[in-house]
Image 1 (tube, rainbow, N blue to C red):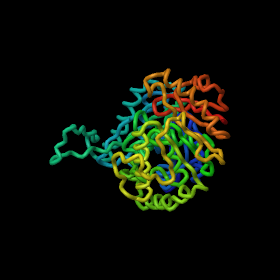
Image 2: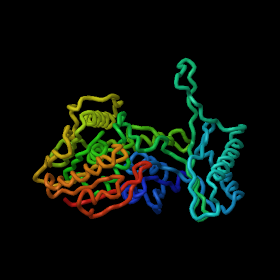
Image 3: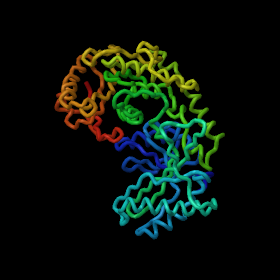
Length: 415
């Protein structure tokens, strides 16, 4: 592995969002190799890795491939894993965990055994390189901490193993916390939409910042905030750190250069000027709108390089570029009547409400959006495969997409 050249990296994403992630990488001038089931492979040096970590909106994690080899039995798996240059990504004092194993159309199928063998091989090599008898293990910190004698948690490198047609790919996670943790949301409301999923459906909907955007079920504001970041040209990872910073391949100067490049592109004027960007939303729940306003305020703190303030602020908090109101969906109307745009939303799920029939009633009532938003396009994500029958109209397009662990459907309409 020579990071002066390019290596193979992988962006993990929701199944159904591979196209959005591939397009993002290409816009950053990063070469895409191929896309698979929830994974996009690309070529990257250190700069490209930082660009992907900080700049990708729809990816959940970025991993670096440390080895790629054929294994039809466990002996070959052990030898291949033991030959991988783990020390180039896992420094002395860092532990290692094989977090995920996926195997498909391969002779090696026992995921637990694969996990154990890869961990044993990696540990054997690292212990030999660092002249230690065992790798550090995670420290479990009790809930009631003794702050006078607090033991710092051990950093752990997470590894994922993919085996496809007997070809093994060993990947080390460079993200740490998943990339949907942007830093602007300290309160999320009930069952919030994952940030990377919100970004995915925005990118897949065809919305551009020249069109108005409205969310009549805004909840904690995730869709609106991801839209504002896109409109401002704000990279989503500017307010957080990554696991790569603790690895031997880290380059703090390069990281700062990439962060500065991304930060220099932020332009709030696009949403301050109503002729350029118009983003609005509403929810019938006062607390949800207050949380949304608070999340927007934290986003602005991050964009300005400030430490984001925690806590819920008033629903009347001024939110630059985003107009928020406490309003039921049945009363929501186009705030931009002369210029049709996009409704992008995440209506309440039956699983979220705890009442499938209530969710279906809401889907039926959504049919009235056509009268109040004439000429607009509608894009929505729901876990209900029968949404069309309750909405009363067949979608122009439908694709499967996941929201975390919830299999969902992305419907698009012209109203």
